[in-house]
Image (cartoon, rainbow, N blue to C red; front, side):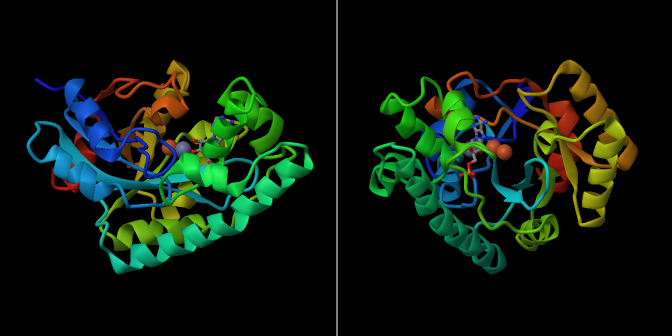
Length: 279
Ligand code: AMP
Ligand code: ZN
Ligand code: FE
Ligand code: FE
């Protein structure tokens, strides 16, 4: 029996390091019941991953992760069960790609002003795919000895508020959720701690407002969550009638401490969500 799932992973199509098929193979090797590929701002890896999953026992869920406008923290929405061919979604993703093309060279320029010898071409080469982001810049900074770890690169240069940070144009949460819904998907609030909410009452207000904008579910399980947080989020999901989701936020070698399938997300906890997707 396969009893666990992973509904939040990244491949080399965005800022993970494994090709999409290899993410699926790894999920199969770990005997997961289901795996979702949720690359940032792109559906490019989904066809390859779906093809890889066809002969395997692991069920594949096509997904996406979109960062939306939010003050004071990071609001990421994971879309699960999306149709990668949907025209509305494709238009939205085109916008997000344009926002990255605006932002990336400006960050590189800031890094250069800080005395770092780095070019957009180097970062693009390391990224390999269409989505180029800060995790790729962090990896280049590590290679150049400007930081020992990705974490340090974010602290010193790339994180929100750090000297090379430039924000990118984002969708509102409502727009992101509309894009996900238009493509037949369900919208899940990813890793709530990254909202930097003050207390649970504030989190509840944020989540209730997202529900009014179409939120379907809450990422209850994530490696960054403490056992207390996991319990609170589970309780919040139950009280607000939200679907339960969860995953590892696997990025391959980009975040070597994160392992696919960890934390263990019980299939039983996400069964309602899978049922809604017809799985
Ligand atoms: P971007 O979408 O280009 O702004 O990059 C966001 C990605 O960078 C996130 O999905 C994470 O993978 C990574 N990231 C953001 N902040 C940090 C951090 N403090 N430490 C490590 N990785 C981070
Ligand atoms: Zn990422
Ligand atoms: Fe995220
Ligand atoms: Fe993620």
